[in-house]
Image (tube, rainbow, N blue to C red; front, side, top):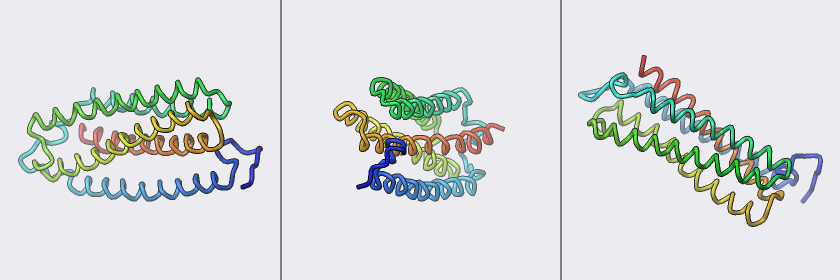
Length: 198
């Protein structure tokens, strides 16, 4: 196993480099998944049936909260990785915890939004528009939920073993995943919510 100390900690072994490359390939598959869900949504986005239209359903305040929470969590995740590269365990852990809390807040707002939709009679069976909307948002929400569990597991490892090549590699790969979810949300915010509210 080669060790190149000129590289950032998360890249210093060949195995770590391969893991990062492999994760980029995985994200490529995730892009295909979300592209498919967006395509289905855009195809069905005007098929309201007897259900509400996006203009009747969407509420900007909640969506802005979700966007603020997720974008801020991405920023604090970046600060966690920056702290990791400086070898600062306590700030890294602090920023990771803040990232997880913002992610949890995002999920809380999204679940509340879903409950409101269902209470108003907008369910996955109501129309093709709503079934594609719930599938797209639900898939993203499931990814965020997985990210929270994954991020928590990494924090436990960093607390136990400190910052080394293995924990740095796992933390960096997690940050790629978290930033990816942020990018997907920007597309959801722009092309689902804002377009629907126009």
